[in-house]
Image (cartoon, rainbow, N blue to C red; front, side, top):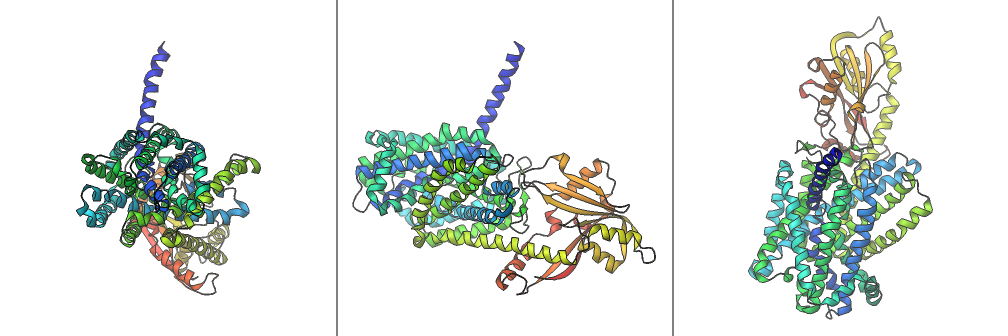
Length: 633
């Protein structure tokens, strides 16, 4: 009897937690896909609307949209990919980190796949805010045509404010994201339901036969239309990337209970409206609403697009942090904007780059119609990359046979390749923009990883193995360095060799502290590291020890905090009598270094932009000593 009584409140609290997380995920995870109805159907109709649209074309189009949502979002992302996680984290780079452990010879190919996927997501993070906010504000033209000239200025003000508040963090406002976006989905669903009765023939769209018939009948134009149909699933990548914030079940519940039904009803309603009133083809979304409701809907749409943009920006911050920790990008300043949410971070450098990119897109394209053509490539490209990585995941992690993995993923892969091909037809109309953004990001990542490898190899040639160095220092008697009280911690990326800063200190100052720690900070291929596995200490001799600190790729690498943990664990040293020694290298370009001159200069530029290690590793600033050297690269 008592056990039943105990289970009831427990299951109630579990249900409440699930509801709260599902509601939160509606704002963050589904914000992007929830703004697609503003422009997706309108843009898909455009290529076939020259000679007026026939019943078959409208039904076929809506059928294509419903089945694209079903196959790509429901089957691939919600039901399958959400299970392919790296200790609870999702996204291209999480998948890559997981596969890197067993990559072997395919490491380079996997790196490029991951870099391309990440770069396309960054491109997406620039285009989404520009396109979504423009398409929402354009609804003002229907409220009063005199506002048509103010669409771009209003959009610019909204976007500048959105990027300006990033440094404050979204923890305070994000609790409203879920409810506002939930209201948005309900309004869309009700508006669609209200119009389905305009022409009940639209319900035939549930039959995939009409989607296939449309593609066969339209031929080449059908391919162009496919590019616009893909706008219905923008945001599906964000759904996977945000897995760590909410967990699998809340994201799945939100999709099946609210998001998918609302989107389906809305597209059916738009289709029925156009069948009954062909003149609404100009802007079927906003024309679903009566005149009196237009302004409130435009305001709600703008709020929904701001929230969607916020989700993509947060995703870009999160992705950049993963890329830094995995060694794809130089160290950057990372600020935490929430005491409780580890995912709430702010990267000023990334924020500035995104703001610049978004502003450029708004001014160059000037309308959502022009920008929609640029959109699909980054989304489809990222999806194709994820499918390829998922193939590796099935084989390596779930131990599927090649045949089984191919049977499951090949149909998806071919479908996405078709969509990618359809979007590539738009390259000359603006599709070159995401391609150029992605190419730029890939070149930066490739240059950084290549340059750091060359640098590491150069350093290896002149380094002294640590055990040999310790032995020689301990053996010296006549020329022994002066021993000074206190502790010295030398940071190095390779614990097997004596750090350059230690060698310089001995060479120039002829002193050695009574306690010397060789510290290496390692990033694990998991999102987080348990407290018990945070550090390892290995004694080499009386005066020398090695410390290895471990962090997950989603964590802040706070060395001071871990030293505090070490003191609690019984390792005696006083922070105030501890000095941190860092080696600082001045890089000099050299055309014979293994990289072309332009790449040398780019690498040096990136290295100069990198955050100071003492800030990045959260070292006590008044205890840091830097010793420099020149390195030709």
